[in-house]
Image: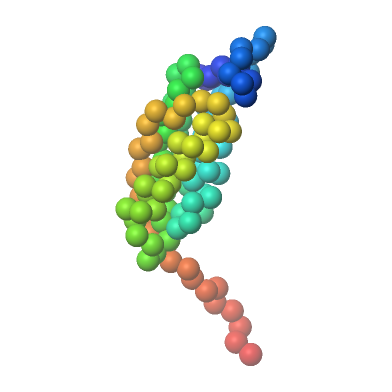
Length: 113
């Protein structure tokens, strides 16, 4: 497991001690961040490779139809960079996105009265 060390306060001063963020934690944080973007559906999968204070993300993203795929992926990429860095203190150097599905809202079939 690769980890990243984060050890500066909000003013940028180095503090004694070390905080380590695992790849698993970065993956989960990034998946939650991607799900915050309008047009992204459930089932986001993220792989993260952490090296020092940087991470590269590979994202499998289900997009809700009829949302514009290009716009959703660009918004997701920007949000992932910002939100993941904000929550982990790790710089996101790269975000590769594969649109894994176009999903539609389906109404569950039930008994009609």
